[in-house]
Length: 101
Image (cartoon, rainbow, N blue to C red; front, side, top):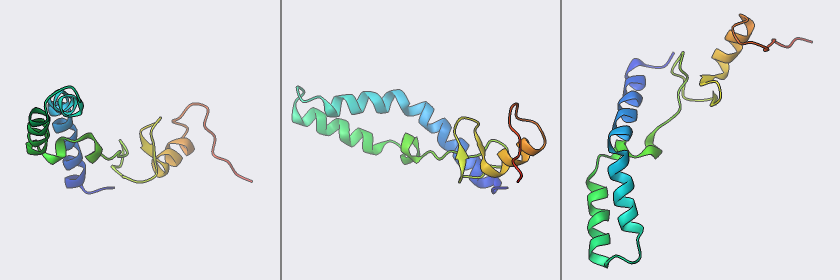
């Protein structure tokens, strides 16, 4: 089980990303537009830099919904490999059978 503080920090980042997504997209669009004057594009870059770092989508990290584990994460199921194995063994995932030979 991951530390609760790490899980809460990740949730806070998700909220910040959602809050600033539109503003970040707008500023990035202005900064990337070649037809706009150089000063305006530079100002957009400065405003983008002023936004909180954790509002960037690249700062997010996928975590297991059950345990909070950040590694070995299956995107389709939103759980880690360990949680997936436990759920599969318990018969909680339809069609999944634990292999043995």
